[in-house]
Amino acid sequence: MDWLERLNQIKSEGGSCVLVSIVLVRGHAPREAGAKMVVSSSDPSSDPSSNMFSSVSGSVGGGNLEQMCIVKARGMLERGGPKTELLTVPLTLKNTGQYGVQCCGGEVTLTLEYLNFSKPQVAIFGAGHVGLALARVLSTLPIEILLVEPAQTRLERRYPDPRPRRGFGDSRAVPSSPGFGLHRFDWLEREVDSLL
Image (cartoon, rainbow, N blue to C red):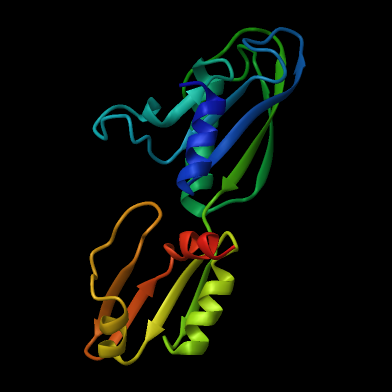
């Protein structure tokens, strides 16, 4: 899978990744300016026991340069940022990296951009007529809506099936303590579309 396909997949899944791009090349380098690589925390198509390259798509040149970028990107993913980091790397025998040397003789400048595609969450407390109306209106936005209802029986009457489902039609009523329920309103997108 190339870097652009992987980036689109991560975006559609609401995940996060680091986009590594070569922005400037001076002298000889293994790749040209514009080369890109996506580093993500996981790749659903790979075996979780495989090596650390399983979550990398694309290439910025291999060797020490690429390994250093992968390690920095993984650190950004673990910390949730910074949003952008600029990195200049000389590719000479004098620059011995942790993962070896690259002796192309030039120098590359790269950007590492942390991208987070997850949806923000909004919690609505109360599943009465006002809470439901508010959930319906908010469901037109690209957010995840959580409806919290202290009267578990009211929630169970309105949403008797607590099993989570995927895609449109998602609903889940989850009691977090006796007499307390939580409902995900992802399914409202379809309901609102049918009303329009």
